Every structure is written in C-alpha cells, then in structure tokens.
Amino acid sequence: MRKAWIFAVFLGVIAPLPAAADETLVRFDGGIGVIPVRAGPAANTVRGVNPGGQPWVIADLKATIKTDGRIKVDGRGVLLAGGDAIGTVAGQVVGATLFCANDGNVQHKSGAVPLAPDGDFRIDSVLNPAPPATCDSPVLLIRGGNGDGNWFAAGIPKLDD
Image (cartoon, one colour):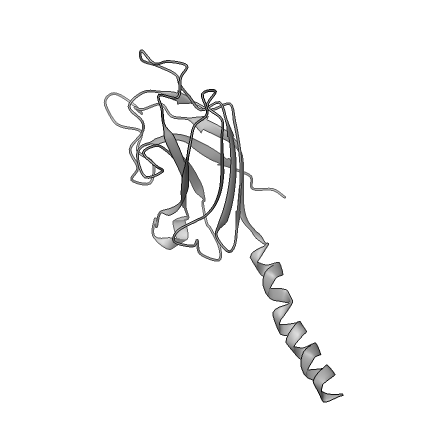
C-alpha cells in the first residue's frame, strides 16, 4: 500500500512537468520584410541588429516558441527586393532571434537553415539561451549569416489566442 502511495505522489510531481514545457510562450503570424533605411540615411536597426543591405520581402511567416525554448518557424518567400540579385535568396542561410523587452535585450538564437531557391525555410530548433518565463514586447527577427547577421524579416506577434 505504501509503495502505491509513493508512486502516486511521484506521478503527481513528475506528470505536470512535460505539460509545462508544452506551454506556448509567444506566437508570430505573418512577416514584415526589411527596408534598410528609416528616414534619410538612418539605418532601420531593430534591438541593436542592423538591417540587410538591400530590401527583402517575406510572403508569410508562422512561428511558435515554447516556454522551454523550443522554436518552430515556417517561412515562405524570403527574397531580395532590390539590387542586381532581385528575386533570389543570394545563397543566404538564416536563423531566428527572439528578443523579450523584460530580459535586457538578450538575443535568444535558433539554429540556422539555408533558404530554398524560392525563399522558403523551416526552423525546428531550441533557442540559446533559453527565453525567460514571460516575454514582454516580443520581437522575432529572421537573420542572415547563420542567424547572427543582419535582419531580413520580422515576425508579427500574435497577441490573441
């Protein structure tokens, strides 16, 4: 009888842990391509990250980030929107970076993946370092240079469930 009670207590403590890891921290639905300058010569810098040197577009983006740092991003049509290589991916490899205003602009980075010729990509990774338990004013940047270079696109936060 005592073993059954200990086992029940053990299950009560351990069972909720995986459920907590499955909780969604933040989601993004839609994307915004980069325009390298804001006004005049001022660079369109976001959270200290410089923009790509040319305009980029993105057709669609969906991303989910879990409280344990797991990230899944499905991006479509990330393509150059200017310059001689317009309409191509220019051989870029991209990664995602999450910023949360409540943790001092720490860069939570995913692994990197190559862009397909049509600009599509999928990231299934874990953010490093792990994000905080809450994420105020989330910003998700899609960055070149193995995910730690200039930003090409940004996710649109999905604030409603």
